[in-house]
Image (cartoon, rainbow, N blue to C red):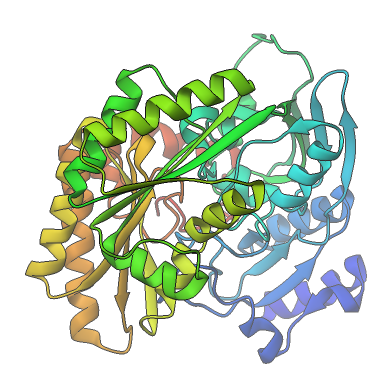
Length: 460
């Protein structure tokens, strides 16, 4: 604590007292992120507004060997920005400027605290499109998106954050400033250091700028909702859509529990007499969109859909998309603790995995609502529980383990878009294998030999 006390004095000198928080009430707000049932008070919270300030904080933390935990808006769902005891939480949310939109090169450069929606809006104003759209896009920051390699509803067609990062400015754990990448579409000079930092969850460096790739805005889109009596019918519809060489922008699903919660919350007019619902959006050239929408409707009907609804206006399409985006919020109203999980399997194994999750819920007497990105096999089984009930939480932990083990057995992964953080690091060795774990540990040790940067995340 003596070191921390000295550190606080020096932080105030570097950043100004207004940018250094030490009061218990202030620290409490930064003791958790979006991950349920995890919290830890930090030693101090600081706000930086320039790269030079971040560099000065990193140098101080390195000198005093005090853990440093980077943080954006705190929307993460794997405990990636959870503090460690007596650490410095370095918040970059106030570094939120869009620095440049380059229409000639189809790029956007911004600071780490820029929200995903602000980036999307800036691109749209220039007639361009930034596709990544995590569910928290209205408040999540690009620094966190890059750190976790965030996905979203459009991942099937457009990919994840990694596919849109062209360059990064990063402060390394020793305080050195590194720029990696550029505006060139082709660049194969040396190792791809840029990719090393994407998805590193703040353990290898602190992002201070991002250069992002933009694409032309789709000229048209069409949104459909199809409902089914059985999840297998929905899964077969998805398989048939992909087999028909149609790659929708969005191909989402909700199970019965989630449908009822969402409709109660969003009042979007979703049908309630079904076991599964698909939300599908095609975008692109108007003629192609019309043709794809007709094919999708025919495929859904061949697979016995109960009802298919085609949005008749942009407003109706937006309402349907908002209903899907509200799934987590809707489920969170049901129980005191909502634990949103993230596992991905090959599309061919999706129906099997959904049945397995339902069986886990039955065997362990748990309430689980499942939704997710059916087009890319990414499931979000969401546990509706109460962290004060220790016995039930023990059953939840067992259920998690079984779900992740089954995902691995089916050729899947323990996380498709939320990251490893604290929540999943115990599952990583069985997924990654010892050679991968060794390489990751050695990379981290080389870049951060004192182990100050976001310690305890991904692995110990």
